[in-house]
Image (cartoon, rainbow, N blue to C red; front, side, top):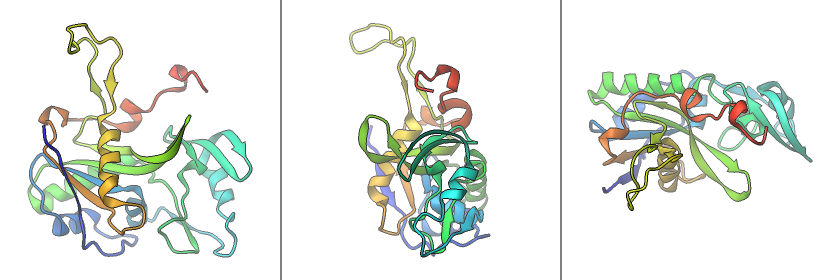
Length: 231
């Protein structure tokens, strides 16, 4: 298998109400079976999931973090690790002040899976191609330094590749292996987008067609508290 990943250049600054699918279809060369990775930030901007904060107070978004949290798991100084209504466990409930105006903070989309479906349908209507769509965001990781992009919404691509019951290279049956395909593709796409390069969309070409299909991050990838040994 060979994957090709390319950043999509030429997109304008996204504002509330923009036709994100149309802008992507115009800027990118797309083909059936491609996967389009879209950063959460421009999805939130297009959906007007942005709130006002005090540009002179670096902590003025903290009340918003509290509002966006359904449960606070840990606090350390100004850092809050909380659970969002989507079931995501992340820093500051996903509230982010990077890559937005100084007097604004971006929230997570209300329903990232629905956002991905809307973009996918819009691209099909405008470009006539059937693609998978991943909405990505940057999360920290317990027990490891650094951040990585993960999928918070999908459409047309399976979030999990379930290998349970299949043989490994030695013929032994795999018992627990489930590969987070959507997260791996989101992380790979971030390598060509960067955090400050102004490239919020990437196209991945050459994925296994078996990875395409229905799925939901909230239903398929988010671990329930009952299965979580640390909550």
